[in-house]
Image (cartoon, rainbow, N blue to C red):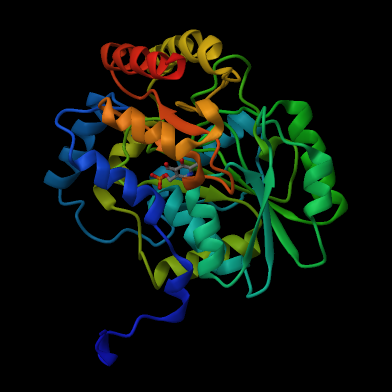
Length: 372
Ligand code: PLP
């Protein structure tokens, strides 16, 4: 029995990690699995950014920074945004502990108990958990089977309790990229209902078939979240950033002061050095991996071609993701069942952020399993 002094707060009952834990428990038994479950790049942080972070430590940049982040990094991001969006409005930027940190601050700042938050299903797991943690109601809206946003379905999901929409393009776990027309329709809907849009653009570099379009370029009432984790392979450095309506950003900054305090100081220095780097070669390599996945799983499973990120979300043969994932793991290939990211369990996620060799081996096994 739990000791009374170890009583867990009620809000924690809203969190459930059982789906993903089962996969990792199974995987722990495998020796050297072909791991197609990892949500981070397989390349390393660019050398000059690594050197800058080490140098920053040596120079004594080991103390708290300003809560909102160093002026140097914020100014550099402001310059980049000026070039991309034409913004010259003196807006504020907040450097966060990854996009995860920004999401937590945003949800805590914006979601009241009972508030509804609408987002596409399948979705990045953190969204539903953080909304629940704040006492809100996650409202996932199906985008099966092609993972394009259906604006009518989104509109139908909006009620008087709806607080905001979350958009994630390129998307985890589907790799879907929303077109400018898709985003414009969502922006029009949000404007009509006066809803804030949180745009999680952590995969903005990984967009393979068409130029990336940001919700922030189409809709002023956007809370824009971006990060360094995927673009520069800095998942462990915990650096992201956020900009948007001043009243919201001010409160998020205040909450950061009383929680994370600041993003890691030496990582902010390294991130600043990364901002100027050209990541085209890395992105090209991921485009080729995406093409490998499509060539294998398009014909075998009817995979809808993913346009970005480094994931694909094909239907499981027989429509039962758990059964297929279990068989894949028995054959040493690690993939994740769809119900970790969705109200349905008919698909599975494969991450192609691995070597070409491992990916080819994994795809061969998955195709064989699908055909057997
Ligand atoms: N948003 C999405 C869609 C993600 O897939 C992830 C990480 O997998 C994150 C946010 C969190 O990234 P960060 O490392 O910046 O916290």
